[in-house]
Image (cartoon, rainbow, N blue to C red; front, top):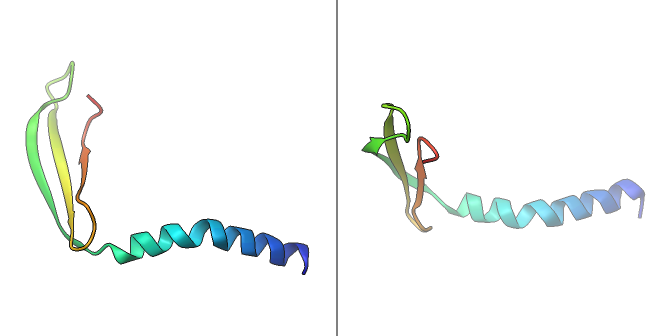
Length: 65
């Protein structure tokens, strides 16, 4: 097997499991809720909840604090 073939096989083995999991999750909706203000500023802080049909919900925030 050529060097490029081996490299392609290793890359596919590393990437394929992650893409299968992401592809299996179907986004139903994104919910946005204001949950206060960012630390040290008066900028509104938002919580984003991503709701999937067959995966766990994912929550992110608009500022780190």
